Image (cartoon, rainbow, N blue to C red; front, top):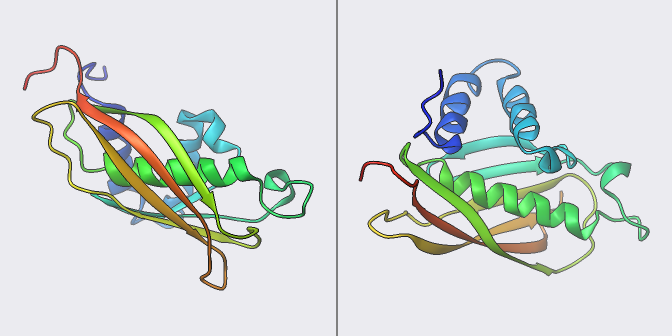
Length: 164
């Protein structure tokens, strides 16, 4: 039976460490993240790098994420940025930590087309008190040009009733 005082982020970390070295493991991990967060699944993102404080996620340009301007939809970009910041920030958290985004902002630099790469380097987390962290993901197109910058404010703390 799953430990009720263990965060979902700890399970995500365990899955990544187990699956990522295997052939097809990053693809499977990405599908499992999508199944645990159904709205995130809609963008079809693939996690290609993940460690404490760092994440790199790619998203294919396909019809399902496009808008009427023949570019990738703003909300698909926001979804990609939130996923990237969340993975980077929460990957290294202890088992009794929890986090939730409380604010999302995005700066659109140019139309997004082609396979996009979202990268994030998150700050270290201090769990002495519950606190907000602003974390930025930079999204680039195949030419390496920035198409968007997404900032997610994550509230990080310990789960209720967890030992400190």
